[in-house]
Length: 340
Ligand code: KG4
Ligand code: ZN
Image (cartoon, rainbow, N blue to C red; front, side):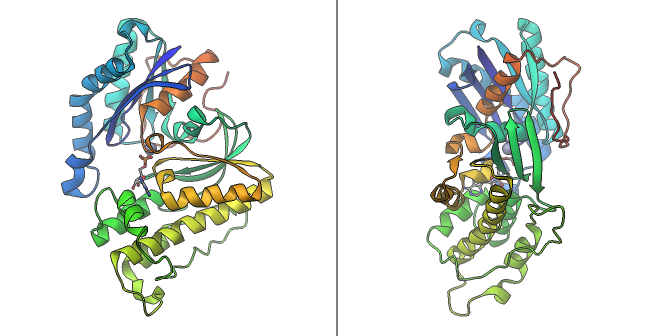
Protein backbone atom coordinates (compact mmCIF):
# COMPACT_ATOMS: atom_id res chain seq x y z
CA UNK A 1 0.00 0.00 0.00
CA UNK A 2 1.47 3.39 -1.02
CA UNK A 3 0.38 6.24 1.25
CA UNK A 4 0.79 9.93 0.45
CA UNK A 5 1.58 11.72 3.73
CA UNK A 6 1.18 15.49 4.01
CA UNK A 7 2.60 17.66 6.79
CA UNK A 8 1.95 21.40 7.01
CA UNK A 9 1.49 21.98 10.73
CA UNK A 10 4.18 24.63 11.08
CA UNK A 11 6.87 25.92 8.72
CA UNK A 12 7.77 22.78 6.79
CA UNK A 13 5.71 21.97 3.71
CA UNK A 14 6.22 18.26 3.28
CA UNK A 15 4.84 15.43 1.15
CA UNK A 16 6.08 11.84 1.27
CA UNK A 17 5.23 8.56 -0.35
CA UNK A 18 5.76 5.54 1.87
CA UNK A 19 5.13 1.96 0.86
CA UNK A 20 3.77 -0.46 3.45
CA UNK A 21 4.73 1.85 6.31
CA UNK A 22 8.47 1.33 6.13
CA UNK A 23 9.79 1.92 2.63
CA UNK A 24 10.24 5.66 2.08
CA UNK A 25 9.92 6.22 -1.67
CA UNK A 26 10.23 10.00 -1.30
CA UNK A 27 10.10 12.55 1.49
CA UNK A 28 10.13 16.11 0.16
CA UNK A 29 10.52 18.76 2.86
CA UNK A 30 10.26 22.33 1.58
CA UNK A 31 11.36 24.45 4.50
CA UNK A 32 10.27 28.03 5.00
CA UNK A 33 13.20 28.78 7.32
CA UNK A 34 14.74 31.47 5.11
CA UNK A 35 11.41 33.32 4.80
CA UNK A 36 10.83 33.44 8.56
CA UNK A 37 14.46 34.22 9.37
CA UNK A 38 14.04 38.04 9.25
CA UNK A 39 11.45 37.71 12.06
CA UNK A 40 13.53 35.19 14.07
CA UNK A 41 10.48 33.00 14.48
CA UNK A 42 7.64 31.45 12.53
CA UNK A 43 5.04 34.02 11.43
CA UNK A 44 1.77 32.04 11.27
CA UNK A 45 0.07 34.07 8.55
CA UNK A 46 3.15 33.91 6.34
CA UNK A 47 3.47 30.15 6.94
CA UNK A 48 -0.06 29.37 5.79
CA UNK A 49 0.26 31.57 2.70
CA UNK A 50 3.49 29.84 1.70
CA UNK A 51 1.94 26.39 2.21
CA UNK A 52 -0.89 27.42 -0.12
CA UNK A 53 1.60 28.44 -2.79
CA UNK A 54 3.88 25.44 -2.40
CA UNK A 55 1.83 22.37 -1.59
CA UNK A 56 0.82 21.36 -5.08
CA UNK A 57 4.42 21.52 -6.31
CA UNK A 58 5.71 19.68 -3.24
CA UNK A 59 3.27 16.81 -3.88
CA UNK A 60 4.25 16.68 -7.54
CA UNK A 61 7.93 16.54 -6.56
CA UNK A 62 7.22 13.70 -4.12
CA UNK A 63 5.51 11.70 -6.88
CA UNK A 64 8.34 12.38 -9.34
CA UNK A 65 11.06 11.50 -6.80
CA UNK A 66 9.28 8.25 -5.88
CA UNK A 67 9.20 7.35 -9.58
CA UNK A 68 5.59 6.25 -9.38
CA UNK A 69 2.47 7.31 -11.21
CA UNK A 70 -0.21 9.30 -9.39
CA UNK A 71 -2.48 6.28 -9.97
CA UNK A 72 -0.22 4.14 -7.76
CA UNK A 73 -1.21 6.11 -4.65
CA UNK A 74 -3.55 4.02 -2.46
CA UNK A 75 -4.44 6.46 0.33
CA UNK A 76 -3.95 10.03 1.56
CA UNK A 77 -2.91 10.98 5.11
CA UNK A 78 -2.52 14.44 6.58
CA UNK A 79 -1.57 16.04 9.90
CA UNK A 80 -4.65 17.75 11.27
CA UNK A 81 -3.52 18.56 14.83
CA UNK A 82 -1.90 20.14 16.75
CA UNK A 83 -0.18 23.07 15.07
CA UNK A 84 -0.82 26.44 13.49
CA UNK A 85 -4.46 26.37 12.45
CA UNK A 86 -4.06 28.21 9.14
CA UNK A 87 -1.13 25.99 8.13
CA UNK A 88 -2.93 22.80 9.12
CA UNK A 89 -5.99 23.82 7.12
CA UNK A 90 -3.95 24.09 3.93
CA UNK A 91 -2.73 20.49 4.22
CA UNK A 92 -6.11 19.14 5.32
CA UNK A 93 -7.98 20.90 2.49
CA UNK A 94 -5.47 19.74 -0.10
CA UNK A 95 -5.57 16.16 1.20
CA UNK A 96 -9.37 16.08 1.15
CA UNK A 97 -9.46 17.40 -2.42
CA UNK A 98 -6.84 14.92 -3.55
CA UNK A 99 -8.56 11.96 -1.88
CA UNK A 100 -12.06 12.94 -3.02
CA UNK A 101 -11.08 13.55 -6.62
CA UNK A 102 -9.32 10.19 -6.86
CA UNK A 103 -11.74 8.29 -4.63
CA UNK A 104 -9.02 7.28 -2.19
CA UNK A 105 -9.18 6.50 1.55
CA UNK A 106 -8.42 9.60 3.63
CA UNK A 107 -7.10 9.74 7.17
CA UNK A 108 -6.11 12.53 9.56
CA UNK A 109 -3.06 12.02 11.76
CA UNK A 110 -2.02 13.52 15.10
CA UNK A 111 1.36 15.26 14.76
CA UNK A 112 2.61 14.28 18.22
CA UNK A 113 1.81 10.61 17.70
CA UNK A 114 3.57 10.73 14.35
CA UNK A 115 6.76 12.15 15.96
CA UNK A 116 6.61 9.37 18.53
CA UNK A 117 6.17 6.82 15.76
CA UNK A 118 8.95 8.14 13.47
CA UNK A 119 11.72 5.94 14.89
CA UNK A 120 9.60 2.88 14.07
CA UNK A 121 9.91 3.47 10.33
CA UNK A 122 13.54 2.46 10.02
CA UNK A 123 14.33 0.83 13.38
CA UNK A 124 11.16 -0.85 14.64
CA UNK A 125 11.16 -1.39 18.39
CA UNK A 126 9.01 -3.99 20.06
CA UNK A 127 6.23 -2.58 22.26
CA UNK A 128 6.02 -1.54 25.02
CA UNK A 129 8.63 1.17 25.22
CA UNK A 130 9.24 4.52 26.84
CA UNK A 131 8.50 7.31 24.34
CA UNK A 132 10.30 10.63 24.62
CA UNK A 133 8.81 13.38 22.47
CA UNK A 134 10.97 16.48 22.33
CA UNK A 135 9.95 19.19 19.86
CA UNK A 136 9.45 22.91 19.50
CA UNK A 137 5.95 22.70 20.92
CA UNK A 138 5.96 19.65 23.18
CA UNK A 139 7.95 17.69 25.74
CA UNK A 140 6.34 14.40 26.73
CA UNK A 141 7.59 11.25 28.45
CA UNK A 142 5.15 8.43 27.88
CA UNK A 143 4.55 4.71 27.91
CA UNK A 144 3.86 3.40 24.40
CA UNK A 145 2.03 0.06 24.22
CA UNK A 146 1.11 0.22 20.56
CA UNK A 147 0.95 2.75 17.75
CA UNK A 148 -2.35 4.04 19.10
CA UNK A 149 -1.81 3.29 22.79
CA UNK A 150 0.05 6.06 24.56
CA UNK A 151 -0.07 6.85 28.26
CA UNK A 152 1.49 10.16 29.29
CA UNK A 153 3.79 9.81 32.30
CA UNK A 154 5.23 13.30 32.35
CA UNK A 155 5.13 16.52 30.41
CA UNK A 156 6.50 20.04 30.56
CA UNK A 157 4.51 22.27 32.86
CA UNK A 158 5.51 25.35 30.87
CA UNK A 159 7.86 25.76 27.87
CA UNK A 160 8.78 22.94 25.53
CA UNK A 161 12.46 21.98 25.34
CA UNK A 162 12.76 23.16 21.71
CA UNK A 163 11.18 26.47 22.62
CA UNK A 164 13.87 26.97 25.29
CA UNK A 165 16.60 26.27 22.71
CA UNK A 166 14.98 28.71 20.29
CA UNK A 167 14.49 31.51 22.85
CA UNK A 168 18.03 31.28 24.23
CA UNK A 169 19.43 31.35 20.69
CA UNK A 170 17.24 34.30 19.77
CA UNK A 171 18.24 36.29 22.85
CA UNK A 172 21.97 35.81 22.26
CA UNK A 173 21.74 36.08 18.48
CA UNK A 174 23.15 32.58 17.94
CA UNK A 175 21.26 32.14 14.69
CA UNK A 176 17.96 30.83 13.39
CA UNK A 177 16.63 28.20 13.79
CA UNK A 178 17.90 28.20 17.34
CA UNK A 179 18.15 24.49 18.18
CA UNK A 180 20.63 23.71 15.44
CA UNK A 181 22.65 26.87 16.22
CA UNK A 182 22.97 25.94 19.91
CA UNK A 183 23.91 22.35 18.99
CA UNK A 184 26.70 23.58 16.67
CA UNK A 185 28.10 26.19 19.07
CA UNK A 186 27.96 23.77 22.01
CA UNK A 187 30.36 21.42 20.27
CA UNK A 188 33.13 23.98 20.82
CA UNK A 189 32.10 25.13 24.31
CA UNK A 190 32.71 24.19 27.94
CA UNK A 191 29.47 22.68 29.31
CA UNK A 192 30.58 23.42 32.88
CA UNK A 193 31.19 27.15 32.38
CA UNK A 194 27.73 27.85 33.81
CA UNK A 195 26.13 25.37 36.21
CA UNK A 196 22.41 25.86 35.72
CA UNK A 197 20.24 24.05 38.27
CA UNK A 198 17.43 21.66 37.33
CA UNK A 199 13.82 22.56 38.22
CA UNK A 200 12.58 21.82 41.71
CA UNK A 201 9.04 20.74 41.07
CA UNK A 202 6.54 19.68 43.66
CA UNK A 203 6.40 16.26 42.07
CA UNK A 204 4.07 14.00 44.11
CA UNK A 205 1.84 12.30 41.49
CA UNK A 206 3.84 13.76 38.61
CA UNK A 207 7.42 12.59 39.10
CA UNK A 208 8.31 12.82 35.43
CA UNK A 209 7.03 16.32 34.78
CA UNK A 210 9.61 18.84 33.65
CA UNK A 211 9.95 22.61 33.33
CA UNK A 212 12.04 24.69 30.96
CA UNK A 213 11.01 28.26 31.72
CA UNK A 214 13.35 28.46 34.75
CA UNK A 215 16.35 27.29 32.74
CA UNK A 216 15.44 29.72 29.97
CA UNK A 217 15.25 32.62 32.43
CA UNK A 218 18.47 31.57 34.17
CA UNK A 219 20.36 31.42 30.86
CA UNK A 220 18.98 34.69 29.57
CA UNK A 221 18.67 36.87 32.67
CA UNK A 222 20.81 35.38 35.43
CA UNK A 223 23.89 34.15 33.66
CA UNK A 224 26.32 35.56 36.24
CA UNK A 225 24.68 33.70 39.11
CA UNK A 226 25.66 30.38 37.58
CA UNK A 227 29.06 31.30 36.15
CA UNK A 228 32.11 29.31 37.31
CA UNK A 229 33.96 32.62 37.72
CA UNK A 230 36.74 31.88 35.27
CA UNK A 231 35.49 30.59 31.92
CA UNK A 232 34.91 33.04 29.10
CA UNK A 233 31.29 34.18 28.78
CA UNK A 234 31.37 33.15 25.14
CA UNK A 235 28.48 31.99 22.91
CA UNK A 236 30.09 28.53 22.77
CA UNK A 237 30.24 28.24 26.58
CA UNK A 238 26.71 29.57 27.09
CA UNK A 239 25.34 27.18 24.44
CA UNK A 240 27.19 24.16 25.81
CA UNK A 241 26.17 24.85 29.42
CA UNK A 242 22.54 25.50 28.52
CA UNK A 243 22.36 22.39 26.33
CA UNK A 244 23.92 20.21 29.03
CA UNK A 245 21.37 21.40 31.60
CA UNK A 246 18.40 21.09 29.22
CA UNK A 247 19.28 17.55 28.19
CA UNK A 248 20.44 16.31 31.60
CA UNK A 249 17.19 17.26 33.32
CA UNK A 250 15.30 15.30 30.67
CA UNK A 251 17.59 12.27 30.83
CA UNK A 252 17.27 12.22 34.62
CA UNK A 253 13.50 11.77 34.25
CA UNK A 254 13.89 9.26 31.43
CA UNK A 255 16.19 7.14 33.61
CA UNK A 256 13.79 7.33 36.56
CA UNK A 257 10.82 6.41 34.33
CA UNK A 258 12.72 3.43 32.87
CA UNK A 259 13.65 2.17 36.31
CA UNK A 260 10.24 2.64 37.84
CA UNK A 261 8.16 1.30 34.94
CA UNK A 262 10.53 -1.59 34.25
CA UNK A 263 10.43 -0.77 30.53
CA UNK A 264 13.50 -2.01 28.68
CA UNK A 265 13.25 0.04 25.50
CA UNK A 266 13.25 3.76 24.82
CA UNK A 267 12.51 5.72 21.68
CA UNK A 268 12.81 9.47 21.08
CA UNK A 269 11.26 11.68 18.41
CA UNK A 270 10.65 15.31 17.46
CA UNK A 271 13.00 18.08 16.32
CA UNK A 272 15.14 18.12 19.47
CA UNK A 273 15.82 14.39 19.02
CA UNK A 274 18.21 15.65 16.31
CA UNK A 275 20.36 17.20 19.06
CA UNK A 276 23.78 15.55 19.14
CA UNK A 277 24.21 15.69 22.93
CA UNK A 278 20.73 14.29 23.55
CA UNK A 279 21.40 11.48 21.07
CA UNK A 280 24.67 10.60 22.79
CA UNK A 281 23.05 10.63 26.23
CA UNK A 282 20.23 8.40 24.98
CA UNK A 283 22.74 6.00 23.44
CA UNK A 284 24.55 5.88 26.78
CA UNK A 285 21.43 4.18 28.17
CA UNK A 286 22.47 1.11 26.18
CA UNK A 287 25.20 0.55 28.76
CA UNK A 288 22.43 -0.14 31.26
CA UNK A 289 21.01 -2.81 28.93
CA UNK A 290 18.27 -0.65 27.42
CA UNK A 291 17.41 -0.80 23.73
CA UNK A 292 17.47 2.72 22.29
CA UNK A 293 16.00 3.98 19.04
CA UNK A 294 15.63 7.40 17.49
CA UNK A 295 14.83 8.53 13.96
CA UNK A 296 17.38 9.51 11.32
CA UNK A 297 17.95 13.28 11.43
CA UNK A 298 15.58 13.95 8.52
CA UNK A 299 12.80 12.11 10.33
CA UNK A 300 13.22 14.03 13.62
CA UNK A 301 11.97 17.40 12.42
CA UNK A 302 8.60 17.76 10.70
CA UNK A 303 8.19 15.51 7.67
CA UNK A 304 5.49 13.78 5.65
CA UNK A 305 7.06 10.31 5.91
CA UNK A 306 6.15 9.94 9.59
CA UNK A 307 2.56 10.89 8.73
CA UNK A 308 2.31 8.33 5.91
CA UNK A 309 3.99 5.62 8.00
CA UNK A 310 1.71 6.01 11.02
CA UNK A 311 -1.31 6.29 8.71
CA UNK A 312 -0.43 2.90 7.23
CA UNK A 313 -0.86 1.29 10.66
CA UNK A 314 -4.37 2.73 11.02
CA UNK A 315 -5.37 2.10 7.40
CA UNK A 316 -4.24 -1.53 7.64
CA UNK A 317 -6.62 -1.87 10.60
CA UNK A 318 -9.46 -0.48 8.50
CA UNK A 319 -9.54 3.00 10.08
CA UNK A 320 -10.62 5.91 7.82
CA UNK A 321 -11.52 9.54 8.50
CA UNK A 322 -14.50 11.17 6.93
CA UNK A 323 -14.45 14.44 5.07
CA UNK A 324 -16.13 16.30 7.95
CA UNK A 325 -12.92 15.95 9.94
CA UNK A 326 -11.20 19.31 10.26
CA UNK A 327 -8.01 20.76 11.71
CA UNK A 328 -7.38 21.74 15.32
CA UNK A 329 -4.59 23.76 16.93
CA UNK A 330 -5.04 21.91 20.23
CA UNK A 331 -3.45 18.80 21.68
CA UNK A 332 -6.03 16.08 22.18
CA UNK A 333 -6.11 13.75 25.15
CA UNK A 334 -3.81 10.77 24.83
CA UNK A 335 -6.44 8.07 24.92
CA UNK A 336 -6.84 5.83 21.90
CA UNK A 337 -7.30 8.16 18.97
CA UNK A 338 -9.39 5.86 16.83
CA UNK A 339 -11.39 3.35 18.82
CA UNK A 340 -12.23 0.33 16.77
O1 KG4 B 1 9.47 18.63 15.55
P1 KG4 B 1 9.77 19.98 15.07
O2 KG4 B 1 10.33 20.13 13.67
O3 KG4 B 1 8.52 20.91 15.15
C1 KG4 B 1 7.58 20.82 16.20
O4 KG4 B 1 6.73 19.91 16.15
O5 KG4 B 1 7.73 21.64 17.14
O6 KG4 B 1 10.78 20.61 16.13
C2 KG4 B 1 11.33 21.87 15.96
C3 KG4 B 1 12.21 22.15 17.16
C4 KG4 B 1 12.72 23.58 17.19
O7 KG4 B 1 12.55 24.09 18.49
C5 KG4 B 1 14.19 23.43 16.84
O8 KG4 B 1 15.01 24.44 17.39
C6 KG4 B 1 14.50 22.09 17.47
O9 KG4 B 1 13.37 21.30 17.15
N1 KG4 B 1 15.71 21.46 16.91
C7 KG4 B 1 16.81 21.22 17.66
C8 KG4 B 1 17.77 20.66 16.79
N2 KG4 B 1 17.21 20.57 15.53
C9 KG4 B 1 15.95 21.07 15.65
N3 KG4 B 1 17.06 21.44 18.97
C10 KG4 B 1 18.27 21.09 19.43
N4 KG4 B 1 19.25 20.56 18.66
C11 KG4 B 1 19.04 20.33 17.34
N5 KG4 B 1 20.02 19.80 16.59
ZN1 ZN C 1 6.84 18.60 14.85
